[in-house]
Amino acid sequence: MDYEAADSILVDFSSNQAQLMGKVKIRFGSMELQSGRAFQNWLSRSLKALPIADSLGRMADTPRFVDG
Image 1 (tube, rainbow, N blue to C red):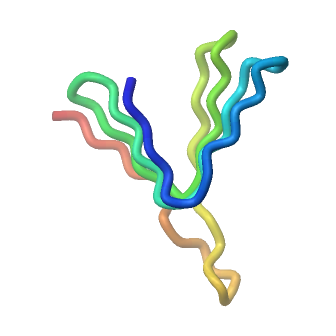
Image 2: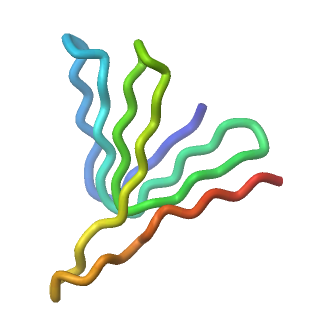
Image 3: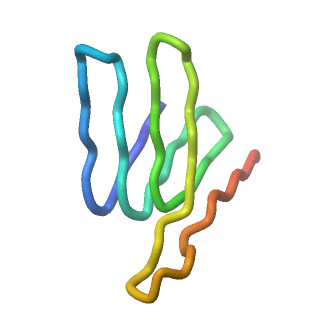
């Protein structure tokens, strides 16, 4: 799995979680997930993608999933 975030990546090893903020891209094989922010939990093997609010409070960078 490859991932990147334009703003920040915060990793908490004690809770086995990571938070990615700002123009997030996560790639796994031929799949790619893009969103404004994402939360990953290694124990539950879960990934949650959410939009992020712009300067006017409108939702931007809504999650987008592409396979192929």
